Length: 334
Image (cartoon, rainbow, N blue to C red):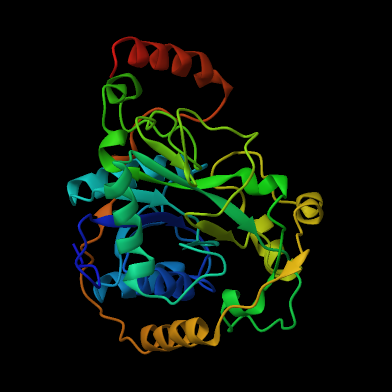
């Protein structure tokens, strides 16, 4: 597996599924690689250059690509099972599932893009608190922008966002110890039990939600950003969002993306400009990646479809079974 930019106590990988994300992949990868993270991406294809970009980045050892192009419908949770299996095989200690419109930051606004603010920072938190999971809240961005030039980075085009108290920011993304996905529950679920995209409820031995320990997710808690956040650019411009509507929802058959959703979640209450230092780091790295040669060779990418096997753990039909398993887990201290 590709090495981190800097050696760190724990191996941490950001895992994602990508479909028709060609406009945004290079920026997203450049940002998180500067923070020292490794990246594993399930390539779900599409009608743009997503697959060719991922092949290029894989061949140049920037990311690790698994092939997930032929998965029929609702590929997100099955892809996460495959990504978890690959991460375990590659001996990662911690993983986080992010979308291509989500950016991790140890602070708000983000600091300099260096491993000390990325992989080393997360590793230190896990070591210090002996964590099983670290969940960080969203900061949701709106569509207001001064330019329609999509060749410019998302982080420089969109600066208007929700305030801290906005309820939608209660959602999180979570760094989770990889072994928390491989427990006795795998027997019941025929694979890694992925219960959703935001957090892993069974990884609750030492579960830090921002800077407070919890045993289960508390949607009534006040949003806070003491240990970091996830910058979430779920809309971008209306023109860009229309492409997202056409692409469909990766997790559910019913597509939540529509005009009403856009209006409700178009948060433009506050403006925060990122530093010139950070944006210069980012644009320089993007330029380097754009200059990379495409290496043509027989693909050695892992076929992710057969690694995705397991029960789909999203939906009401799993609630009773999940509660029973949690009762057994707590009863026997597992």
